[in-house]
Length: 112
Image (cartoon, rainbow, N blue to C red; front, side, top):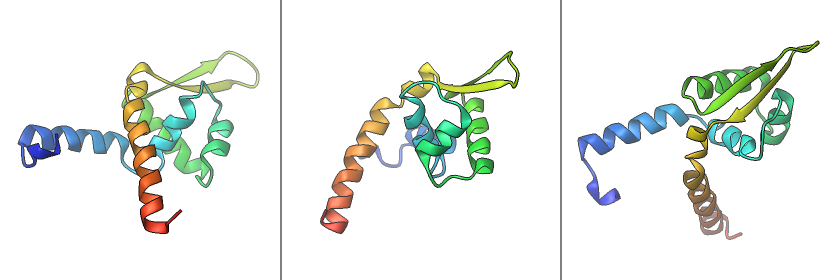
């Protein structure tokens, strides 16, 4: 696939993917939600190091891109839960490959 370098259609599709997943948090949020639906604070704890403001912004963006579903339950206080959509689950292979590449990269750079 990389051998198609310079192909305008390929460049456009990569650009679209990068825009939907830009930043260091979105894939980590999706990975957290792949384990099942979670509330805001649960995601925050699992991802670690993300501010509430940033998490809120990233969840809204993921929802806009139909990668995450936000569900509000009619209770008091209101309960809000996030889950990964089937479209978001289609990134499973990407997450797996990033995981394996990250292991190799860490070993190459840090020798660990």
